[in-house]
Image (spheres, rainbow over the protein chains, first blue to last red):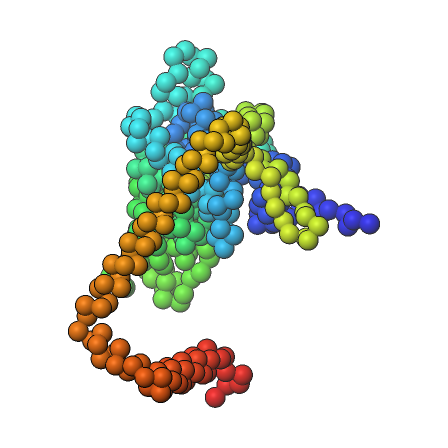
Length: 201
Length: 192
């Protein structure tokens, strides 16, 4: 009698990848389920346009999953996914040269409805209405400050403090020397500190 | 009071709750570093509390529409894994197979209908090869006979006794060579 298969959500990334290589479609879906929110959030914060972020996230996953046979298990799967996501977002920013970004919505939105639909939604999961307002305000200020960072600083600070990645992993994801990553993160924090200084008053 | 402010690495360590005695002392004395460390902490907490966004529902389905999932692995009787190619690989393999099969079929059909022509071509090819072979052999023999060492080598096998001696010499050299090669290629059975 065959042994019962463990549920996919209890397996490690490497085990799920091995299953996907064997042609298990549910394993592909499990990898998407695990990374769709982190990847989408990173790309959304990089490009500030929901539609574009959706397209770029989709492009990221199509690249990752169609190249799953070339993935080398000695590296972290999450690093590989974030590397492709970051490169996809940076390529887009270089193509579009999106310098002026708005928290109020996509710079490409033509109508107020489109602006609202593409605006960042902040402050989910907060206990009281007062906390909700405060958190929305603080979150909004931080999002706006992140927006003003250079794209390289933005990638670093998002990967470090939003995604919680280690310095070494960020260096691997961005293909930068460890020292450069540390410098970028310190400079980004310095800039954020200056931009958010008024909140302390 | 120390004039050197906290380094980026020390500020980093503070964010994860690591504080050396020197840093503690400095923070007690330096209002600027206290302010920097405190704002850093507030910024990082703010960043960590930022929400994660979700793509529209059906994201996974839209991705899967454009992903080539390989056919599940098939196990052969010998227990060896192999895959049936899918997508582009399958199309390429099928195209190559069709081209090869079409070429093979055409050549077989044509050969069956033109046996006389094929036989004529075959005879021509055989006679041509025969001519080239003899011409080559004659040219080689003529070349060898014109070499300055030819007469001395010929002298070595001029009588049956000399020929036998030369043959024995060659055999001995060949045997020594074989034995030496065998020893060279034999793997050592234990460490020296």
